[in-house]
Picture (cartoon, one colour):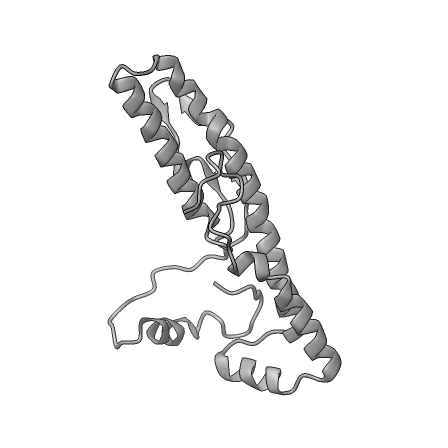
Length: 178
């Protein structure tokens, strides 16, 4: 995934980029490509009768920050806890109605945080411009003037919350550390 669009020769470079990412000579055939666009969506409801949605079935948002996986794990953890309590007879089946109320706020918060992370990453690319490979990125960073270095440093600083976590997932109703 890159934040670039309209880069000349991007599709032709995919086999080489895939080989580099795999780090090994592997046989493959690219059947199709598609453009990715960011979305921040949370399902209208997490339950319909005996069917429960969790993880990517309940929400989707950009991968920035890893919050999609974290939110999916939260969904399943809360849902399984409720199911176990009901199945063991320790709770009324109505407890299952609390699943959505417990998880939806976290998904909504994390969807917005993921979009914010993506926007902050775009600030870095705005400073650097298109760099289709590592060599061009290194050359560009080496050529930054003092003002661009300051802009890049500021853009990188905005990433602090994206990469340095306090061990808590935004919106986690349990308030627990991972």
